[in-house]
Image (cartoon, rainbow, N blue to C red; front, top):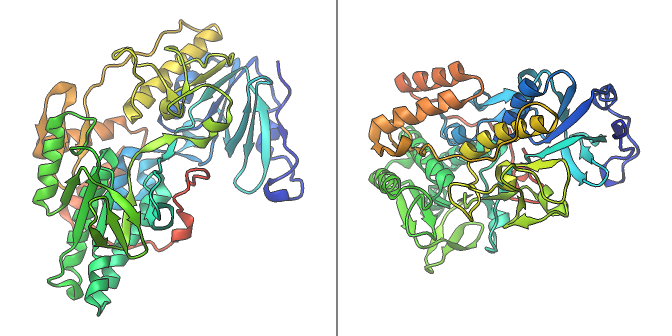
Length: 458
């Protein structure tokens, strides 16, 4: 068994010892088993819900997460594009997971030998707790490449903070461009460069371009001024991991709107007022949006456990070899893809959600409730929201495009959300009959969204 959870006694940066939090004190009330879940993204959130359903009253479920909400990531581009309110794609963890013990904090260390997890709270408090079973669902962060200037001048797109900041930044650039007397400055402020043409980059470009088109019409100072969007990727096509028919549809829609889709090239150097491309071209811009991809959360690097391309090695039951009673799934784990032997499942919400549910069943089975089963999932198809009424989708392998794909895509998202469906639907309906209000919140500074994967912020 294990000792009761305690405060760690000292905060970060050499601060004086801090009092243990009330949450840590409350966790001294023992049940027969304790399962700790690290992270509450798609995998962790669904693991917690399924485990609560299966494990019964003798099992305590502890969820540790750096924010108090579950974020429906696929709709973040619509927040940046001004179609959805930020709170509407989040649900509160304390209210959705009422029968868990929720800890607001970031896990700093996992001691598999002592079966103990340590965390740091948002205001310097810290604590640790033991476990009988541990589920690691720490998720992922922006993936950086060794490109000079990227960390200084680019903004990522992985958190709600980044999505809201980017929205404000885009609006601010056009408003400043409308006042600029220098043509070179106006051009730079009206140029937006997106690096990475996967899911995120393609949807951010689609929604961002529509928003700037709307906003530019309301600014007399931009009359006759082109607003330029560029989408770059070293791959030979957009959405390189998806069906080529989806790529063709997405590229056609974006090019029709005037987006410069450039494949086989990327940014070589980022500067304050421009970027230099791998082709040698120099593009004046003050907006570099980094959507190259993701990698496992930095927590994985410090676990002293085997990894595969930066993700934790697990077996088909999502158990971590060499670490008894430790499981992992979602983006931070290389879960074997039994439908494609020798490969790991992709880092998608579709896999993470289903892995979370299955790992909960396997953990429950290890506690005497049910039977463990390997994770096996055939993709149900992919959906790409291209803004407006446009979309690209292939549900169950059936290729769709145009308004039909747009309706299917939004219908899927509504069904997949864990809450706030009426609010999201209300936003869509309101914006369908009235013009979206393209104003900035002006509450997040550039300093609050550094492209720093070692210390990611929510």
